[in-house]
Amino acid sequence: MVLILKRRGPINELNIKKLLVEYIYILIIGFFVINPGLILIHYLTREPPNAAVFVIANVIFSLIILIFFSFFRGKQILDAYISEKLHVQEVKNVQIQTELKFLKAQFQPHFLFNALNTIYFQIDEKNKAPRKTIEMLTDLLRYQLYDVNTPVSVKQEFDFISTYIDFQRARMKKSLILDVSLDSSLNECIIHPLLLFPFVENAIKYVGGEYWIRIIARPEGDCLYFKVTNSIPHDIELKTKRKGIGLDNLERRLELLYPERYELITNKSGDTFVAELKIKLQDDSEMCCNR
Image (cartoon, rainbow, N blue to C red):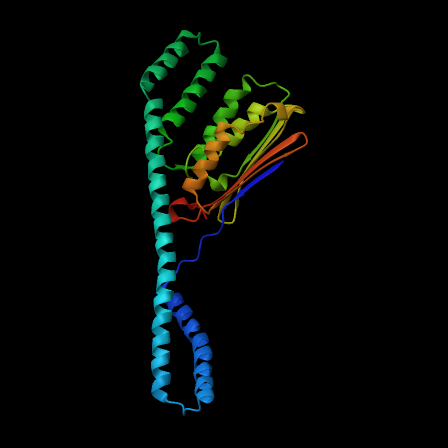
């Protein structure tokens, strides 16, 4: 099973020069049609060609073409403008809804952190494992609650993923083979947060069979390439008939945050599940400082 979501390339912007060339091209074709037609009419009616008639006919033809051309091209430009405005408004609405959700999620967050802090100090200092687990949980919650409203560096996203993996190690089998390769040359790039995490979360949730996970992040030109591969049990279809909420949300966020600039591929083949994400970092604010 393969799912590929590839954004189409951006539509070429219409500019005055392009429109003028297109209009002239239509006029030239029209002149090669209308003028021979006038000559033929004069020949059949046995009337001598009249220059004034040709001038008037060509002027009228040019005006008619201009009217139709302006109407159709104007409609196209207007539709594109309206579509862009609707997209911007949709992004704003989603941002508002997201902010409201974060506000709800942040309802009395200090109570949660204080509770974790209380539990932390109730654990004997010699019992380092649970104290370390609480520290990692606090870091994960803090990132999800406070650091998701604005773009972050890729290093912050990498650190969050690394902390999450360490946190999950406490419950995972010791036989898990985990191969993580995060290219540090991406550290200074800026992206929207929690775009890479759902793949890691999904892999840890469904890993089975030979029990291995491979995570790769590297630059590809002006793109960030992220790939997570994991082994899965033979009966994984019984558990994943419905798409996960995390991947659904990720797909929606990518469409809004990186329109025309991402490629998302998920592929289940035998006992292996592969998820690949490529994001084009084309804006100056998103480029890597060390490139």
